[in-house]
Length: 312
Image 1 (cartoon, rainbow, N blue to C red):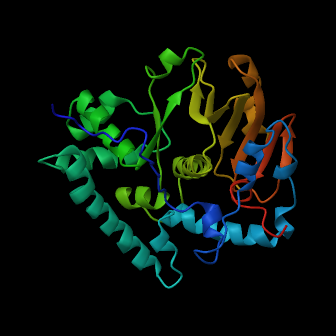
Image 2 (spheres, rainbow, N blue to C red):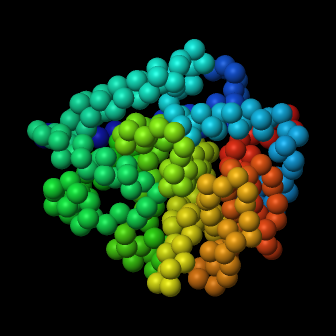
Protein backbone atom coordinates (compact mmCIF):
# COMPACT_ATOMS: atom_id res chain seq x y z
CA UNK A 1 0.00 0.00 0.00
CA UNK A 2 1.30 3.43 -0.93
CA UNK A 3 1.05 6.08 1.80
CA UNK A 4 1.38 9.78 1.06
CA UNK A 5 2.75 11.72 4.05
CA UNK A 6 1.15 15.19 4.22
CA UNK A 7 2.45 16.17 7.69
CA UNK A 8 -1.01 17.41 8.61
CA UNK A 9 -1.02 19.06 12.03
CA UNK A 10 2.77 19.24 12.16
CA UNK A 11 3.38 22.27 10.02
CA UNK A 12 3.74 25.87 11.15
CA UNK A 13 3.43 28.61 8.54
CA UNK A 14 5.15 31.93 9.20
CA UNK A 15 4.25 34.83 6.93
CA UNK A 16 7.08 37.32 6.45
CA UNK A 17 5.96 40.79 5.41
CA UNK A 18 7.98 43.88 4.55
CA UNK A 19 8.96 45.88 7.63
CA UNK A 20 6.20 47.52 9.62
CA UNK A 21 6.58 51.02 11.07
CA UNK A 22 7.12 49.66 14.61
CA UNK A 23 9.94 47.50 13.23
CA UNK A 24 11.44 50.52 11.48
CA UNK A 25 11.45 52.30 14.85
CA UNK A 26 13.94 49.79 16.30
CA UNK A 27 17.69 50.44 16.17
CA UNK A 28 18.90 46.83 16.05
CA UNK A 29 17.60 43.34 15.25
CA UNK A 30 17.67 42.55 18.98
CA UNK A 31 15.36 45.41 20.00
CA UNK A 32 11.83 44.39 21.05
CA UNK A 33 9.12 45.55 18.66
CA UNK A 34 6.39 47.57 20.39
CA UNK A 35 2.78 47.52 19.27
CA UNK A 36 1.56 50.57 17.38
CA UNK A 37 -1.25 52.69 18.76
CA UNK A 38 -3.58 51.01 16.30
CA UNK A 39 -2.74 47.46 17.38
CA UNK A 40 -2.83 48.40 21.07
CA UNK A 41 -6.24 50.00 20.51
CA UNK A 42 -7.63 46.99 18.60
CA UNK A 43 -6.38 44.63 21.29
CA UNK A 44 -8.30 46.65 23.86
CA UNK A 45 -11.70 48.24 23.41
CA UNK A 46 -12.12 50.21 20.16
CA UNK A 47 -15.11 51.96 21.72
CA UNK A 48 -12.62 53.99 23.76
CA UNK A 49 -10.08 56.22 22.05
CA UNK A 50 -7.77 57.62 24.72
CA UNK A 51 -4.66 56.01 23.21
CA UNK A 52 -5.34 57.73 19.88
CA UNK A 53 -5.16 61.21 21.38
CA UNK A 54 -2.13 63.23 22.35
CA UNK A 55 0.00 66.04 20.99
CA UNK A 56 2.08 64.81 18.04
CA UNK A 57 3.72 68.21 17.55
CA UNK A 58 5.55 67.92 20.90
CA UNK A 59 6.36 64.22 20.63
CA UNK A 60 9.94 63.13 19.92
CA UNK A 61 8.79 59.68 18.85
CA UNK A 62 6.31 61.21 16.37
CA UNK A 63 9.09 63.16 14.69
CA UNK A 64 11.01 59.92 14.19
CA UNK A 65 7.88 58.09 13.10
CA UNK A 66 7.14 60.75 10.49
CA UNK A 67 10.62 60.32 9.02
CA UNK A 68 10.19 56.53 8.82
CA UNK A 69 6.70 56.91 7.37
CA UNK A 70 7.85 59.31 4.65
CA UNK A 71 10.57 56.88 3.57
CA UNK A 72 8.04 54.03 3.66
CA UNK A 73 5.62 55.95 1.42
CA UNK A 74 8.25 56.40 -1.29
CA UNK A 75 10.41 53.28 -0.98
CA UNK A 76 8.30 50.74 0.88
CA UNK A 77 9.19 48.41 3.71
CA UNK A 78 11.79 46.05 2.29
CA UNK A 79 14.64 45.91 4.85
CA UNK A 80 17.35 46.75 2.32
CA UNK A 81 15.87 50.11 1.30
CA UNK A 82 16.07 51.34 4.91
CA UNK A 83 19.85 51.06 4.97
CA UNK A 84 20.91 54.65 5.79
CA UNK A 85 24.01 54.28 3.60
CA UNK A 86 21.94 53.79 0.44
CA UNK A 87 21.23 56.71 -1.86
CA UNK A 88 17.83 57.29 -3.45
CA UNK A 89 19.17 55.89 -6.71
CA UNK A 90 20.48 52.79 -4.91
CA UNK A 91 17.03 52.19 -3.45
CA UNK A 92 15.35 52.63 -6.82
CA UNK A 93 17.81 50.21 -8.43
CA UNK A 94 17.27 47.59 -5.72
CA UNK A 95 13.50 47.76 -6.23
CA UNK A 96 13.91 47.31 -9.98
CA UNK A 97 16.13 44.28 -9.42
CA UNK A 98 13.63 42.86 -6.92
CA UNK A 99 10.89 43.22 -9.51
CA UNK A 100 12.96 41.43 -12.13
CA UNK A 101 13.79 38.61 -9.70
CA UNK A 102 10.14 38.27 -8.72
CA UNK A 103 9.03 37.97 -12.35
CA UNK A 104 11.80 35.68 -13.54
CA UNK A 105 11.85 33.34 -10.55
CA UNK A 106 8.77 33.50 -8.33
CA UNK A 107 6.09 33.96 -10.99
CA UNK A 108 7.81 31.62 -13.41
CA UNK A 109 7.85 28.89 -10.72
CA UNK A 110 4.38 29.60 -9.37
CA UNK A 111 2.48 29.96 -12.63
CA UNK A 112 4.75 28.10 -15.06
CA UNK A 113 4.17 30.83 -17.62
CA UNK A 114 6.00 30.34 -20.90
CA UNK A 115 5.47 33.97 -21.87
CA UNK A 116 5.74 36.54 -19.08
CA UNK A 117 4.73 39.41 -21.38
CA UNK A 118 0.95 39.35 -20.70
CA UNK A 119 1.55 38.98 -16.97
CA UNK A 120 3.92 41.98 -16.92
CA UNK A 121 1.33 44.11 -18.72
CA UNK A 122 -1.42 42.95 -16.34
CA UNK A 123 0.80 43.62 -13.31
CA UNK A 124 1.46 47.18 -14.47
CA UNK A 125 -2.23 47.70 -15.19
CA UNK A 126 -3.14 46.47 -11.71
CA UNK A 127 -0.46 48.64 -10.13
CA UNK A 128 -1.97 51.65 -11.89
CA UNK A 129 -5.31 50.63 -10.35
CA UNK A 130 -4.02 50.19 -6.78
CA UNK A 131 -6.48 51.78 -4.40
CA UNK A 132 -9.31 51.39 -6.92
CA UNK A 133 -11.98 48.88 -7.86
CA UNK A 134 -10.91 46.29 -10.43
CA UNK A 135 -13.13 45.65 -13.42
CA UNK A 136 -11.80 42.40 -14.87
CA UNK A 137 -13.26 43.03 -18.31
CA UNK A 138 -11.42 46.36 -18.55
CA UNK A 139 -8.23 44.81 -17.17
CA UNK A 140 -8.48 42.00 -19.72
CA UNK A 141 -8.79 44.47 -22.60
CA UNK A 142 -5.79 46.46 -21.35
CA UNK A 143 -3.59 43.36 -21.11
CA UNK A 144 -5.05 41.59 -24.19
CA UNK A 145 -6.07 38.58 -22.13
CA UNK A 146 -9.36 36.97 -21.15
CA UNK A 147 -11.22 38.02 -17.97
CA UNK A 148 -10.57 34.54 -16.57
CA UNK A 149 -6.84 34.97 -17.13
CA UNK A 150 -6.99 38.43 -15.54
CA UNK A 151 -8.51 36.88 -12.42
CA UNK A 152 -5.85 34.16 -12.45
CA UNK A 153 -3.04 36.73 -12.70
CA UNK A 154 -4.50 38.65 -9.76
CA UNK A 155 -4.55 35.42 -7.79
CA UNK A 156 -0.83 34.92 -8.52
CA UNK A 157 -0.15 38.39 -7.12
CA UNK A 158 -2.20 37.55 -4.03
CA UNK A 159 -0.54 34.24 -3.19
CA UNK A 160 2.91 35.73 -3.75
CA UNK A 161 2.09 38.49 -1.21
CA UNK A 162 2.26 41.32 -3.74
CA UNK A 163 -1.32 42.56 -3.38
CA UNK A 164 -4.20 42.58 -0.93
CA UNK A 165 -7.72 42.13 -2.30
CA UNK A 166 -10.40 43.96 -0.35
CA UNK A 167 -13.92 42.74 -1.07
CA UNK A 168 -17.07 44.81 -0.94
CA UNK A 169 -18.98 44.77 2.32
CA UNK A 170 -22.39 43.12 2.00
CA UNK A 171 -24.65 41.99 4.82
CA UNK A 172 -24.93 38.68 2.98
CA UNK A 173 -21.39 37.19 2.96
CA UNK A 174 -22.16 35.16 -0.18
CA UNK A 175 -22.62 38.36 -2.18
CA UNK A 176 -19.27 39.87 -1.17
CA UNK A 177 -17.29 37.86 -3.72
CA UNK A 178 -19.64 38.81 -6.58
CA UNK A 179 -18.82 42.52 -6.42
CA UNK A 180 -15.79 44.23 -7.94
CA UNK A 181 -12.86 43.91 -5.51
CA UNK A 182 -10.54 46.72 -4.54
CA UNK A 183 -6.84 45.99 -4.69
CA UNK A 184 -3.89 47.41 -2.81
CA UNK A 185 -0.24 46.66 -3.51
CA UNK A 186 1.32 45.56 -0.22
CA UNK A 187 4.51 47.56 -0.66
CA UNK A 188 4.45 51.17 -1.91
CA UNK A 189 8.07 50.95 -3.05
CA UNK A 190 7.32 47.97 -5.28
CA UNK A 191 4.16 49.67 -6.53
CA UNK A 192 5.99 52.83 -7.56
CA UNK A 193 8.76 50.78 -9.14
CA UNK A 194 6.26 48.82 -11.24
CA UNK A 195 4.53 51.95 -12.55
CA UNK A 196 7.83 53.86 -12.82
CA UNK A 197 6.64 56.83 -10.80
CA UNK A 198 8.61 59.13 -8.52
CA UNK A 199 7.79 62.39 -6.82
CA UNK A 200 4.57 63.20 -4.91
CA UNK A 201 2.13 60.40 -4.16
CA UNK A 202 -1.35 60.18 -5.60
CA UNK A 203 -4.33 59.79 -3.30
CA UNK A 204 -4.72 56.16 -4.33
CA UNK A 205 -1.04 55.42 -3.61
CA UNK A 206 -1.36 56.95 -0.14
CA UNK A 207 -4.52 54.96 0.55
CA UNK A 208 -2.88 51.69 -0.52
CA UNK A 209 0.22 52.42 1.58
CA UNK A 210 -1.91 53.02 4.69
CA UNK A 211 -4.14 49.99 4.09
CA UNK A 212 -1.07 47.81 3.48
CA UNK A 213 0.56 48.96 6.72
CA UNK A 214 -2.62 48.30 8.70
CA UNK A 215 -2.89 44.85 7.10
CA UNK A 216 0.74 43.93 7.91
CA UNK A 217 0.39 45.06 11.53
CA UNK A 218 -2.91 43.24 12.05
CA UNK A 219 -1.56 40.00 10.54
CA UNK A 220 1.72 40.22 12.47
CA UNK A 221 -0.26 40.62 15.71
CA UNK A 222 -2.52 37.67 14.72
CA UNK A 223 -5.62 39.74 15.33
CA UNK A 224 -8.95 38.26 14.10
CA UNK A 225 -9.75 41.16 11.77
CA UNK A 226 -11.22 41.03 8.25
CA UNK A 227 -10.79 43.77 5.63
CA UNK A 228 -13.55 45.22 3.45
CA UNK A 229 -14.44 48.38 1.59
CA UNK A 230 -17.94 49.78 1.20
CA UNK A 231 -19.63 51.26 -1.82
CA UNK A 232 -23.36 51.91 -2.01
CA UNK A 233 -25.64 52.40 -4.99
CA UNK A 234 -26.02 56.10 -4.16
CA UNK A 235 -22.26 56.69 -4.43
CA UNK A 236 -21.14 56.52 -0.80
CA UNK A 237 -17.63 55.06 -0.48
CA UNK A 238 -15.71 54.10 2.64
CA UNK A 239 -12.07 53.21 2.03
CA UNK A 240 -11.66 50.54 4.69
CA UNK A 241 -13.88 48.58 7.06
CA UNK A 242 -12.14 46.52 9.73
CA UNK A 243 -14.45 43.76 10.95
CA UNK A 244 -13.83 42.67 14.52
CA UNK A 245 -15.88 40.12 16.40
CA UNK A 246 -17.72 42.85 18.29
CA UNK A 247 -18.23 45.28 15.41
CA UNK A 248 -16.63 47.50 12.77
CA UNK A 249 -14.02 50.23 12.63
CA UNK A 250 -14.45 52.48 9.58
CA UNK A 251 -11.48 54.29 8.05
CA UNK A 252 -11.50 57.14 5.55
CA UNK A 253 -7.98 57.73 4.20
CA UNK A 254 -7.11 61.18 2.86
CA UNK A 255 -3.91 62.54 1.36
CA UNK A 256 -4.27 65.89 3.08
CA UNK A 257 -2.29 67.84 5.66
CA UNK A 258 -5.44 69.32 7.17
CA UNK A 259 -8.32 66.97 8.03
CA UNK A 260 -11.71 68.69 7.90
CA UNK A 261 -15.24 67.79 9.00
CA UNK A 262 -16.17 67.31 5.33
CA UNK A 263 -13.71 64.39 5.22
CA UNK A 264 -16.01 62.58 7.65
CA UNK A 265 -19.03 62.85 5.32
CA UNK A 266 -18.86 59.23 4.03
CA UNK A 267 -18.87 58.00 7.63
CA UNK A 268 -22.08 59.73 8.68
CA UNK A 269 -24.95 57.35 9.42
CA UNK A 270 -22.74 54.42 8.44
CA UNK A 271 -23.90 52.30 11.37
CA UNK A 272 -27.35 51.96 9.79
CA UNK A 273 -25.83 49.98 6.89
CA UNK A 274 -23.91 47.47 8.99
CA UNK A 275 -25.08 44.25 10.61
CA UNK A 276 -22.75 44.76 13.58
CA UNK A 277 -22.20 47.86 15.73
CA UNK A 278 -19.99 50.63 14.32
CA UNK A 279 -17.40 50.90 17.09
CA UNK A 280 -15.49 53.94 15.84
CA UNK A 281 -14.68 55.90 12.70
CA UNK A 282 -11.26 57.28 11.79
CA UNK A 283 -10.08 59.83 9.25
CA UNK A 284 -6.43 58.95 8.59
CA UNK A 285 -4.33 61.62 6.90
CA UNK A 286 -1.04 63.52 6.84
CA UNK A 287 -2.37 66.03 9.35
CA UNK A 288 -0.09 66.62 12.35
CA UNK A 289 -2.89 66.97 14.91
CA UNK A 290 -5.37 64.60 16.50
CA UNK A 291 -8.87 65.96 16.77
CA UNK A 292 -12.50 64.94 17.13
CA UNK A 293 -14.24 65.87 13.87
CA UNK A 294 -17.66 64.62 14.91
CA UNK A 295 -19.07 62.33 17.55
CA UNK A 296 -17.15 59.03 17.27
CA UNK A 297 -15.11 60.29 14.29
CA UNK A 298 -11.45 60.89 15.15
CA UNK A 299 -8.99 62.52 12.73
CA UNK A 300 -5.57 61.02 13.38
CA UNK A 301 -2.19 61.34 11.60
CA UNK A 302 -1.19 58.12 9.83
CA UNK A 303 2.33 58.14 11.31
CA UNK A 304 0.89 58.66 14.81
CA UNK A 305 -1.68 55.87 14.52
CA UNK A 306 0.65 53.31 12.96
CA UNK A 307 3.71 53.83 15.19
CA UNK A 308 4.41 52.89 18.84
CA UNK A 309 3.84 55.49 21.58
CA UNK A 310 7.58 55.36 22.33
CA UNK A 311 8.73 57.84 24.98
CA UNK A 312 5.64 60.09 24.79
